[in-house]
Amino acid sequence: MNILVINCGSSSLKFQLIESNTEAVLGKGLCERIGIDGSRIVYTPAGKDKITIESPMPTHTEAIKLVLDCLTDAENGVIASLAEINAVGHRVVHGGEKFASSVLVNDEVIAAIEECADLAPLHNPANLIGIRVCMELMPGVPEVAVFDTAFHQTMPEKAFLYGLPYEAYTEDKIRRYGFHGTSHSYVSKRVASFLGKDLADLKTIVCHLGNGSSIAAVNGGKCVDTSMGLTPLAGLMMGTRCGDIDPSILEFYAGKHGWDIHEVTDVLNKKSGVLGVSGVSSDFRDVEEAADAGNVRCQYALEAFKYQVAKIIGSYVAAMNGVDAIVFTAGVGENSATTRQGVCDYLGYLGITIDAEANGKRGEEIVISTADSKVKVLVIPTNEELMIARDTLALATK
Ligand code: AMP
Picture 1 (cartoon, rainbow, N blue to C red):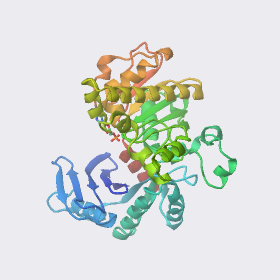
Picture 2 (tube, rainbow, N blue to C red):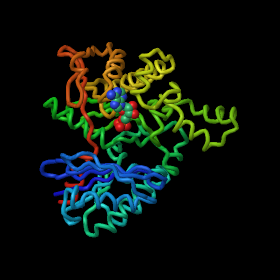
Picture 3 (cartoon, rainbow, N blue to C red):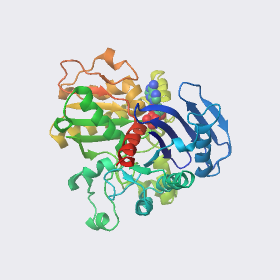
Picture 4 (cartoon, rainbow, N blue to C red):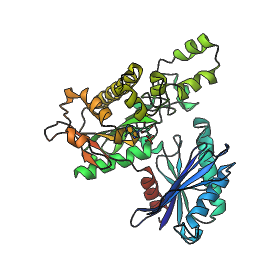
């Protein structure tokens, strides 16, 4: 079966066409600047070079049409017609408490995703447009929604409740939900099979460190705690997001500058984190380079990030009363050896030691701790698209 995986952001759309038997990626790409001047699609058919096409995409409808045109193109397409797309899997950011697993899309599911839109106003509406446009262009093809929040629905009350009036939870749905669930789920399963262990016997801490970062404590395959919260602004400081801060900062900081709530929230989302502290960039590569050249604010930003990762890991060791494996994934987690080493330098009390040569490798599943390390430390490249394709296959053929 050929499965089209669609990940609609507010102004972007990522896609992959995956053949389910071999799990090979037939074609993939990205539409950028949807609804903004200068929109373009970057498309890579398997085994060929990247193709960039500048084309107006006022909405996601034009973007999806362009994706389908690329995939079926006479010269660079990878399928002859849309009839060769057997199912579509959509990443949906927020499933609230309604969805603890992926689901086949129907009218009821669409209504429930709409209901969760106030929890993810930038993402859920874009995800829904993707679903509706695919239904229109590929009628009768099964569509599956895969939620970023679903994997974290196993968290107990003590982990997801905030210290707020209980009605904030029951009436206003304010609780910790957690995100990057598809990645945390994929990586924690891969760890078990890579180590040849039963998932049910493993206590794993997954560090998804990218532009957005979150950590999850996974006990016996189930998420028991995670660092993001009601929204993806919580937890670690990230590329541009502040992560956990004293809630009183909002009123204090807004008061100092005469900002309204939206202006101060904008600063916390877009001008904070590694970018805010370093003043250089949200991209760890730029910040690492500047730190190496002696930029002190970049050094502070990187050290604060590593320190925060290590503190959350420590708290999850307490939450699970132990840990068997700590895993790094996503852009920074997979590529930055210095970040991994720096985080693990804080974890000597767990008996962790890192093998510098293994830690220097890239792009493969690998154990980077030494043979005598008390806790295994690994790098597992994440693959959210593959996880979405697998869930879509399972539901579409049920
Ligand atoms: P993601 O959000 O998972 O796509 O991760 C994107 C982030 O990964 C970028 O913003 C970079 O900061 C980071 N990244 C990618 N490659 C490297 C690298 N070689 N060294 C350090 N950071 C990297």
